[in-house]
Amino acid sequence: MTEHEKHTEEKIFEAATEVFEEKGFSAARMQDISQKAGINKALLHYYYRTKEQLFNAVFEMLAKKLFNRFSPIFEENLSLDEKIKYFLREHISFLQKNPRLPSFILYEINQNPERIKRLIDNLALVSSMQKLMEMHKAELKEYDIDEKNLPQVMTSIVSLSVFPFAAKGILSSIFDKLGYDFNTYIEERKDFAGEFVIKAIKKGK
Image (cartoon, rainbow, N blue to C red):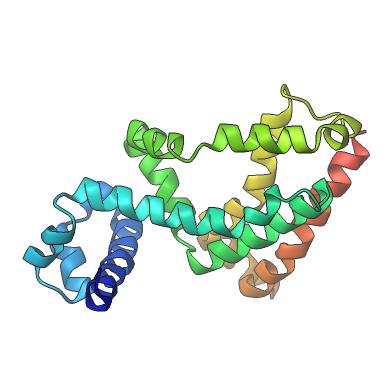
């Protein structure tokens, strides 16, 4: 791929991400994406023949970016506590750059759960979680976390970073009345969320 082709594909990805997040898969049009990318529709179809093919590529690209940030989680030299803090800090930082992503994913899950399920299945999340459980078997046992309650712990951790962005409109309105800045709240949450989880699981020992 030439530099020009790479630049064109980057423009397509950026434009497609914005359009899909703004309108959802069903309402998004290839024409919208080509216009936002500043290219003609024929060129867009040269790179991606269908809207679904482009949607899948964008989803996988975002997932790859996210998981690349989480690679240290699978290193042996970090404790479980350090990994929880790292995950929440990096996840919140990622969502700062992609603030509409949680609402977009939730909307698409409701609109077409099978499409999102297929895409998520390709990420091998289950095997990744099993690897982490094996790496931190002793720590998880100490915190009374096992396969039965792990889903509760996992969804609680993820919700701490996802919910503020999914509910930004409501939270911003409330915070404004309290004289509290939403962006300041997000910056503080990068450390607060990790400490909160660790205190919670240690308290439950």
